[in-house]
Image (cartoon, rainbow, N blue to C red; front, side):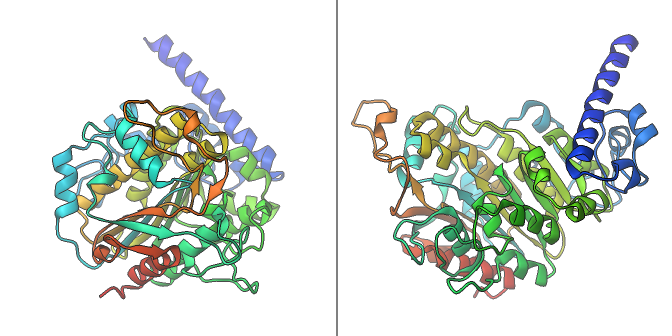
Length: 447
């Protein structure tokens, strides 16, 4: 047994060395051992010899099973719990569990003025995408979708300032700022002036900020909530702006391509300021091991957006909730990008799977809200993609249900839960109204 454990530790040490080498190579100058970056190691022996002063190791994190303060865990039903703050079953099995009665009770409970605001976006998710997932997906919850337990539901118009059919940059900006702009523009007005976004407003209110996506971090949707740029395609500006803003949680895909876009200055900020983790297990170790919470979490993971239903977005959402939970509150944006990619490729199975992937993340938030009635949740889409039709009675969904392989002007669904959420019930609003409502909530101005 000891020999086997030794082999495992040596293997993990090699993996860790490769991760550190990749980071050093991508950033160009300096080494992680010359900075205070908390790069999460998976080998006690390697971390003892090369880790920077003040960083966290797996061995130390695993020994840190108690905390000096209590934390709320999204995957438990109690209000507070002691560390380890993340459910170990969740990370070994990756299963999201919620019952119909539990979901209905959470939806029906009384909510107070929010200190926490969460916006969840299904990129390219049209109304029929949700209906298909409800009726035909085998991977949804046994009662259907958690989304469809919501009472306060309606629709939103999505046109941009210069086109009836929006792109993700313009629609994301509308949701983040409450102001229309032109397609391809991120966080800027039609006359090229920066628009204050909800993340900036939340920071002014003393709140923590989280951005979680299963797409690349420089995608148009997450960028719209933090960045000001006249073109969504200027990914170098987007990437460096993320690092400059330094949200308390920043999680997305494609670590190596993201780092390659950074300047030497931004790489230095990562090395000196951030806690970097390149897998979901490393993120959980970072959360459990860092009790000071002085460093923002920069996390990366890999996910197949056109594959089967995934729990990765739900896992990252729970990590964010644990990291952001504090007395002043937080703003969190979560994006599920697969519904858009599936529209581009006319993949009906991927469409349904991606809706369920988002829905599982919604279930994680519902569990958090059970013990946090001072939380507001808004779930919507930035636009439709693919204009999926419903199949005839008795027929199974096929790729032939797509009527286009691009965005459309179709209205999208809105689901809301929390204080004041009834304003969306059975109404059609503009996507800027969603942004304005969320901003009012962050400011504490809801009546």
